Image: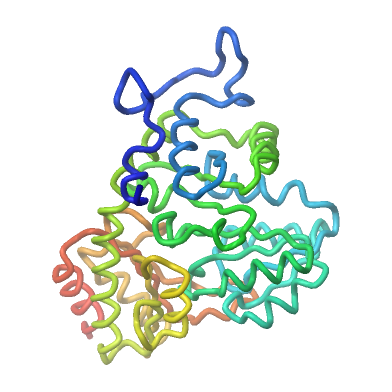
Length: 358
């Protein structure tokens, strides 16, 4: 079956209710404790994501909980290659572990293939985002996986921006793929949840053990909502992706905009890679303003249809200025846009007015 169909049907019970119900239970009469054994609601969600990714999935309380479970087993002093510009939560966690001497961290531009390959020598783990946050860059994931494995490193891919419908990292050689299910999978800005999918059953078992010992278990209602959101992911993503392409073209032609980062643009540095590795260009884009940080802040204040808020992947379009962290090279006047499912002309009228005011 096509993945759109799998997203609708995977994880459903073979009898009884058509949709898996919310099972509110911490323990069971005959087979144990939910924190260790899981629950039917988690398992239905895990089965659906696993079917899409081609691996064995483990649900977590949040995306960051999944990240922590993947980093926790690393031996003391392990070399980790991670993003110089990437998701703030992951970068802060990596930086904190490096500062404490728990890991030897090498930060690189993930879109610079040769730099990543050079940093992988002696590494235990390569952490990749596809696309990258917030610059929407596209690493050469197939080459990175092959070279990292040759150097003896495992590869974990955060594919939150691409979703399992646009990219399956396990097919390209990754060992684990992680998603913040809070975002596109849940899709309605009403839950916190994460999921990691491993190529091997042994790695999945280790993730379950880490989930239990770290106390990173998801709630039953969150798992139910995430699975319900997954059912409509294909139609939401199709609409949002089509709108993102239109907005990217219009932003690129706007006099107030100095640069647009979206791999769907033929001029984007990641266009060829995305066309080769992904099944679409996604619903995330970023753009820079010639007027600097103050102009970017002003746009966030002026929008009325677009919502100025953190996070991404919901039905509503969100905008946020991505300020630089210490050591980052992201532009100061960068605005990240998570495109929702509103009418494209309403969104453009709002952005055009916000960009043109004053």
